[in-house]
Length: 190
Image 1 (cartoon, rainbow, N blue to C red):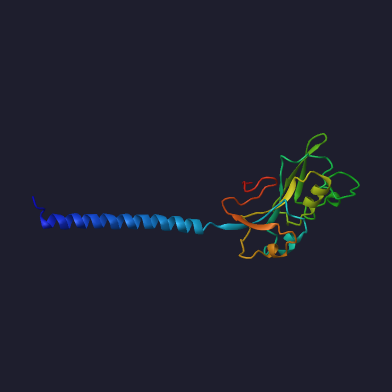
Image 2: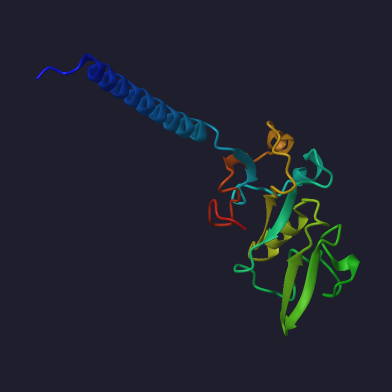
């Protein structure tokens, strides 16, 4: 039985149409995946293991105050009465008076927990990223204070002005879906 020429044309038309639609769909999916893979946003971040607390984060950021802020790793903190990140070296008393505090802007709040323990909280709005508390905590404490770029403030400049002057190369680009390098843990969220 011979096929009707109309049926062959219709089958050929449907077959070619299906091939075209399949090719377009596969091309579209491939294009979307390729675009997604190529457009992963990268953001600037400060590696706390490489940071030398040079105080340049406070002065070289294009923002005032800097987008770099002190972060407190509570699970590392000893909650010491005499905190190297809070008290100025050689402070005559261990109270909360401004002359005894290491932070020039009062960005660390000290709260009594129980004798001899105190909790230290960073007031981000006051923090200028000078790293004085980080340096003190690392020198006379356990290093629970460290600096991080806060992405809700950072402009994500193409060439970070802090990164260009960082003496230790602590500034690096990291994927935006893992923007924070935590002390001892890479890429987790704060």
